Image (cartoon, rainbow, N blue to C red; front, side):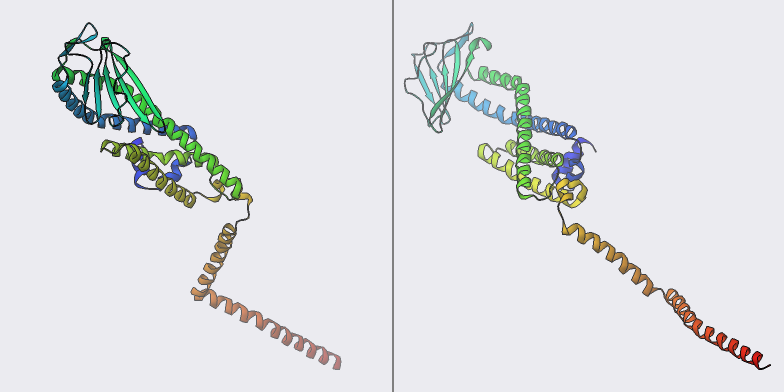
Length: 338
């Protein structure tokens, strides 16, 4: 079965989980690595049009609102009186005269993203207040961007290059992050299952099939969640959808596994504990064989006729033996008279 056929089978049906779950762990991990790579590729390619659309809108707004400025020899220059503050419904822009200058207005929690134009670099500030106020800062030196007058065309071309050049790194980060998260979640759920099995002393899947099942159930979760993100669902919606999909397929795969895998594959607990179900199944199978034999006997008149003749023949044997004994006794009496 090819990779895409496996992915399709794991999404549309639960019947593929038992056969794939009994494979070695190495093969399952390689398959999960491929699934994470395909989901990351789908996510990155699907988000490119959205990024380009937002970059175009941002370039148009900046070109209309920024003062006359340019990048010359890796430094930001402007003739406007500094400092300058511009506000957007999602972010704010600050143009300051010196590197490392503090914002006079302080953090604007209504606009949690702030871009600070300094002479030698662009700082991006992200304000969070959960639970306390925290500022996450990133700096981008202007020497990495080409010289030119800052207007709408310049910004559109700059944003477009930044998006395309960042795709390989974004793909690598999303791929490895998704794979590490999937493996970590599978290990955690397998550990919880082992603890519950030890506490309840109930038979369940062995360690390797249970881990494989926890890994395989993330295939539809990764693929469908990537599709939902491309359609515009973010943050808590993405997390909730992922865990809902994963839970549904994990439960469905577990039920299919227990129905299709024989008792011998359920581990030492299933073989050690007395199970009435297995005994009942065995007795039921023996009884069914006896009933089949009885039905065959009742349905075949030739067998019944042959047994009747044999019984009649056996019943006539004692009478014949008695007649022979009487004849011998008469013969003996006649001989004595003579």
